Image (cartoon, rainbow over all chains, first blue to last red; front, side):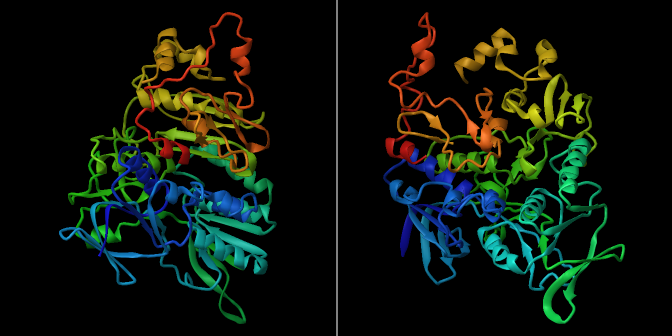
Length: 431
Length: 82
């Protein structure tokens, strides 16, 4: 039986982060990475750019081609793990092979949710989350003149942008009253929607899809969608982008503690000794809202993977939790948010919030909103040139620094130099 | 964005698609939005023996020094791969 001291299931951001952290501490013991995807490690977040032709497949590589060789890692790609036996410390693969391990990391990521809509299995209905998804969409492009995107979250809007840039007639249908609600406040959401509308994308919000329709005369093929209002929108392609859920089936079947995602302690250890989880498959702790649950953001996947890798290699390390953050740039227009962006959103704890805004939307789309709680930054939304040097605010939020001494410096163009001297000196010395 | 063997963190312009997540993450505000949607940051002037700002400093206030302790535990081959 093949044996790896460190076995990693998942070849994306968290898996790579763990492998790098392990190899920083231990270059002797064996490391294996297994993935059901046959590709070299790549960034899923870039599939829309690939579709638009702005990147080649090689341009999506998350690490150079010789990554596994250089770090002396066995990459078992295109092979699916089907069962964990935590007591025997073994992993069974679909092809019948069994692999034993001393330390196991589950970095299995997320999977696109497909709602049980009538017609969801028709040809021409796609999810948009993986390399295989974008390859399928690419192949169907030649037969696509008009597309409907169901779900106006980040993935849906990226798909809509790509299809629009490729000259297709696009309609976005979002059940909630506004697009990008998980990452943007009302003002930024409305402005972003207008960027799409200016380019001919039809935006429908607050209305659901009742069913996906078959094309008349072409059985089995998608022909459009029917809204809950009864309106029918013709389409040759439908993208389902209603959300991504943690891939936790392996962990659940093995008896590990699983909520909406795999539950870990602050070192990345699951309820089973010797088994760790990191990235989108694992639940996270949101430092700003105090909530525990899925947090599918890329920086958390990398740092969570590194943390698990360090602990696997024997260095005890813990996480204080994470901050939700997102940067987008639809049609080249930059938008960023972090922490709480809307104090009235579900899941945001009641507190005394103070909101400072600077809105010059008539200008170049410049928008700055900072949310303070107990004098500390709890979140922000930035658009246009207000995004420059945004990381300074992310840092202030992470460090939970009281802002009273430099409140007047927070708005406008942020510069390290404008912070109080003492704070600036601390920064320069590092942590 | 990657660390090179000499320790400098540089941008591979052929790979950057200008998502600006690095700007949101950099606590020093050291990364700028460049033309053609490519992130810009100090690359320590790789073609020069001494970075231009250091060479131009009239009072030895700017120096190029390496913190030898900071990354001592990162194995050289890992650093290369990142």
